[in-house]
Image 1 (cartoon, chains in turn green, purple):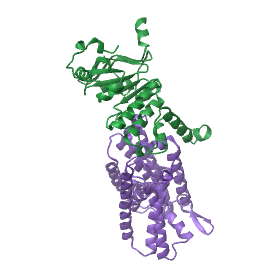
Image 2 (cartoon, one colour; image 1 turned 30 degrees about the horizontal axis):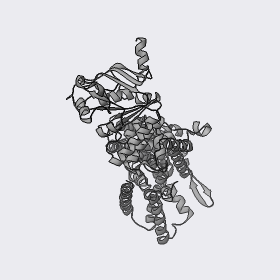
Image 3 (cartoon, one colour; image 1 turned 180 degrees about the vertical axis):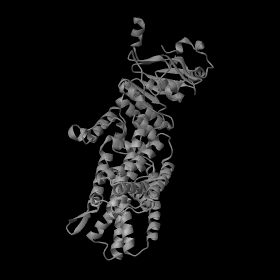
Image 4 (spheres, chains in turn green, brown; image 1 turned 135 degrees about the horizontal axis):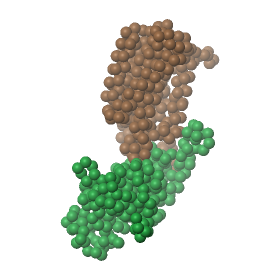
Length: 269
Length: 319
């Protein structure tokens, strides 16, 4: 690797080069590239089968790419599981409300990363430090301005939008490098969708870069700083939502507008 | 921050207490010797087997499963431990361990079929229920095993508090309930049991090995059935190949009456103890009233349906 490429790659929080993933005869990723900058919301769009979800799975450790490399803060990484990605500071919030409804908000925030009490109670009796988890939950949620009254209420008592906010906040509260949100506004009403979008903005403003997978073009255009268009297992283009129209974006996505015909000013640098 | 309504347990958790109080009032008024320390101690002694099975059953139901094999596996365990001790002349502690190993082994088989082959727990345990029953009959030649060593019946012994005889088995049952309650409530692995029953996919995605949690629950349930086998031997002082048939439904009834949701992820294990006592009180009270055992089965059946209905309706209300 030349010094010039390593210095340019370090300006990205996350980068992928030439990712290939094959499932038998099907090539889901065919040399896909990806770049995420610090402090941005990068929307990832693409038709079904464009390689959008395979890309996200590779970045979040849910699948292992056959070829290519992934860099985190300029350093090559290879995740064998979502847990490894999590340990590297990448938090993923999956589609369709990935929360346990009967459990409290605080319990959901700490599910899978519970805190134990110090000393005998924690080490021998393996008791949870419920007080500390509750305090942390209140602090983290206040930090993100999620206006929920009590952290000890069950998630099922919340509205759909509030639940999704809990799921997003869980990812954001623990991510150190990257937050990946998979269709966070799907199945939400207008008002609730806006509530989640507001939260995503606050996550970015805290300095965490966000990868947003969405089918909802108005939401993408409202919130994204750049738009990564996946097509045929590759990256077709990275677009600037302030310059390009929504219909042209869809045209790039479907292939009606080939990448070489995209006006240069519409491409995000 | 939290209102009074937030702190009030849902109706499904208060239900068993209401049922218990109602049953006690009815039997207190209609029979002469229902309200006596000795009778309550007797009830506890009668429910200790079902009570301990119900702990295992609660764990399985919390994961949104069900274990139909519990009673039959318990019967097999008691046959194995008594026959190993009586026929093979094995020392009692070793024979007890062998019996518990067999019930835990059945739990392991149930768990492996549910987690590895992804079979529905209902079908898996329906199968193992019949297998356990058949093995019990074949191995015992459908004969009762008598002359069990005294060490095996020690838990059936009693000590007096005031003038009320309390059996060691009752104490063991209550200790197991408290231990399990603590584990489910205060530790991460206990909370994961709830999470798996609540939303297995979300639980897996946060990195909890859901299959390992499930497998652990089935094996643990098997262990509890094994302890129940020992309690059964202690109470009856024989190895009975026809045991387990009423205990099967009674344990599920106790869990459901105790407010644990059949849809998984909600419930408190101590509720199952109350549920088991409700079943015990009903059987005891109806017997004192001279009602035949067929009616007791009838009433248990109706109770299960009422309890599940309450569960279903309160869940709808929570949405």
